[in-house]
Every structure is written in structure tokens, then in C-alpha cells.
Amino acid sequence: MFHALWDMVQFLGGLWQADFGQLILIGIIVKPVMGAGLWWFVVRKRKGWGGGRQAG
Image (tube, rainbow, N blue to C red; front, side, top):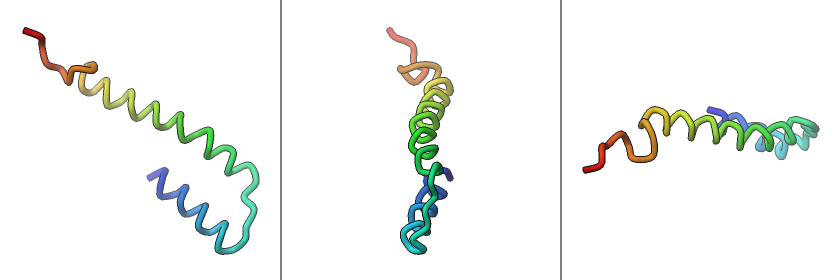
């Protein structure tokens, strides 16, 4: 969802020669934060790196 909104801002900025100013900087900062959050959610859901499987 976030990626679609980011692409829309980039496309409209190019199409209308709009200057979104600080929105671009905020987007650059938010991307890695959201990526880390989604990564943490997936790892937590799998209960660690092993996908929840027991060794042995």
C-alpha cells in the first residue's frame, strides 16, 4: 500500500512538475522504517529465523 502511494506521489510530481518538498525526505526515511517493521512482523510470526521448526 505504501509503495503504491509513494509511486503515485512520484508520478504526479513528474507529470505536474509539482514540488512535494519535505514529502520526499519523509518518504525516504519512512521506507526503511516500514521495511524493518514488516520484517519484524514476519520474523515474529514465524517465531524466529527457523520458521518455527525444531532442530533434531
